[in-house]
Length: 176
Image 1 (cartoon, rainbow, N blue to C red):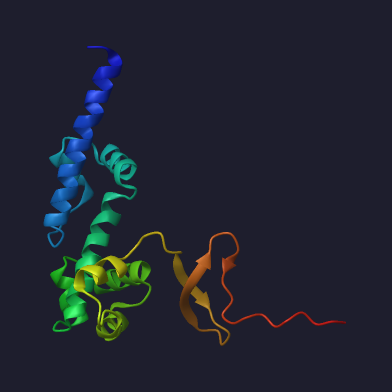
Image 2: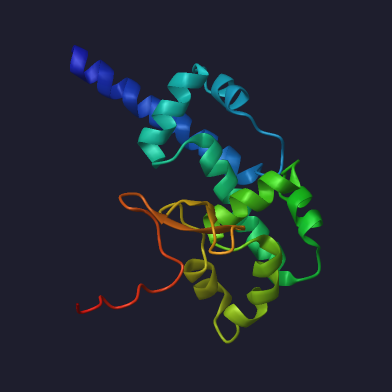
C-alpha cells in the first residue's frame, strides 16, 4: 500500500470515528459531555479531535452540542408546559445563565420571549416545516451588549466590519 492510500484510509477511519461521536452527541445531548471524554472515546487527543471535528462539520464539538441542546430546548419551549429553568435542566445545561446566553446567540431572543412567541410563530405551519424554518443557525451575526441612547445595555446585532448597527435610521444629510 502506498503512502497516499494509507493516509486516505486513515482519513476515512477518522471520519467514521467523528461520525460516531456526532451520533453520540445527538443521542446523549442531555448527558454531561465534555470534549476530553469524547476525544478519549475515539482514541484522539482533545486538540486533534476538536480540530478534526471542526474541519468535518464546520463547528467545534462544544458548539455542535450546544446547537443540539438549543434545538431540543426550542421544541420543549414550543410545547409550553415547562418553565425555562426546567427546559434548561432537561437539555443538560447546568447553568441557566449560560443556557440563556447561548439560546439568545443562536435564536436571537431569550428563551422566555421565545416561549411567549412560539405559539404564534408556528401557527398554521406543519411541524416538519416549522422545525426547518425555525432551526437555530450559527451563521447569524454575533450578539454582544451595546450601549443604548440612554446609557443602558442592550443586545443587538453587530456588523463585523463596521461595529454595532445604529439603533435608529440616520437623519438625511443637511443641505448647507
